[in-house]
Length: 300
Length: 332
Image (cartoon, rainbow over all chains, first blue to last red; front, side, top):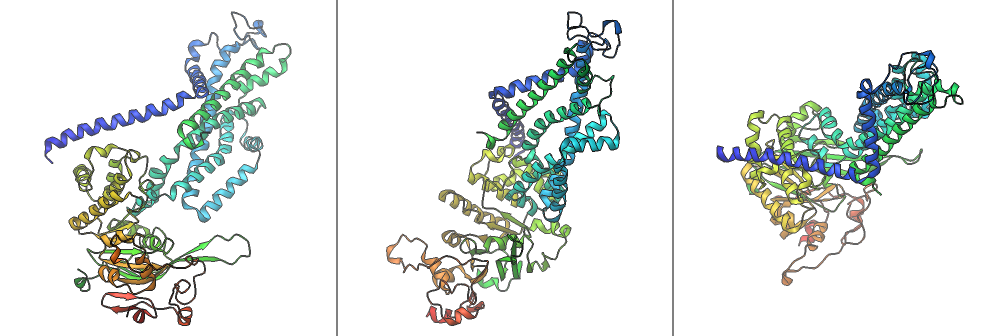
């Protein structure tokens, strides 16, 4: 092969590679796009994420500014969602609160997924007694009701938003570990894993470079569905007073303070509640759509 | 070819290899059930030859290949590669010699990682075994693609974009990438169409000559075995029943099981058609193999001796060994 043709080849090769990547991406998005529910879910999620960035621009008032003269005002043109019992603008608080709620959701799922994936990969790949120890411990964790486990962790660490994140994250570990373990065992016995072992690859390479990329789809799906639950649990814990503390505009905490005024000022509870419900709905719709797009076997 | 094999030193020696699998107990007080997939086999593999292992499914031929590669840890026995014992090596030592023995699998759809391009696969193979420095791998990859008959631009593609035959070529290229001495072909052409099967077989033969390869060819298909082998080993229920030069085995099989196998090959020439030997019954379960000769339950010539005493592998003619009490009588 002369230098000239090999150069031409290399250019062709790079172009071919780019084209293939584009094609794959197009296919994924078109499958996802055909699912209307998933599109709605995606739009909802994007809307919420944009709120977290745009909060300082969109918020008409300071979310913490107490103005007792304007307290408990009904929604109006000056206060679109009304004001709470301390005269703070509910819309501004909700906008800033989106950062807390989404932040807790994402970080707890990330926390749970990180440890869950490692445990699942190790248990599934090594099997035998390693698997027995890991799986049984996870079963013990799953046997606790989620909220109870979270309460135990928070009572040990003290109430705060970070501890809520840890508590919800810990509870997500076994869910991820289980899915990863099952998929790992399935992939492990395929011939291409034997082939790479025969080439002399070490366990680390096999697990992270060859098994992990092939089990990503179920992890992503589980992650997006888990986000909904995580946000809901975090809000729930804050509602119980275990998470975000009063001045903080976390939606669960706002809901909790609105509880006392349900009859006189229902808008104090309605708006944060609505925000949580719609966000959870968005993640659920999107997660289901993702599952269909990524995993054709789950299609009905 | 086989005459000078005797003087050569074997490249791979399999000594009394046993591979047992313990089944999971279903009830608490059940006795342990052991599948004796490979039960004490011996053979040598000489440099440059193609030794085929044939037998029905479940006879332990694929397990033999996997035990040699230590994909399953052998229960007992030894495998010597150039005098070094593979089962006794530490994992690290083993990784270093793995490049010498490669494998081509049966299922072209399961043997390639769907998330990796051909380039990534070949590059990784060379990187793991440190065959070449990164800047020289590109040229080597293009060369490999040429050797296995694939276009160089296919390097960027993913496995799902190829047909079965092309995938098998990729599998071959991946095995060749690390400059192996031995390639174990585990039913390597069984999943392919007849026309493509011939192409891949011819490719293997061509590569064998070019790279001085030694093949351990595992197959249930006797016409394929006849096409590619120098020597043939017949297995039945985890044991070797006959091992011989190809011509000697096909012309004058000594074991009744081999005779039955050979009579099952379809022939086009009606005048050459021999008597079809049809075996009765199924292969007995490897959980409880028959006592004595393992073939006695299905052998038309079985006697009391066969039911009691297990025959050993005896070299009856030059380079032709058989494990049957009555091989001599039956052959005359």
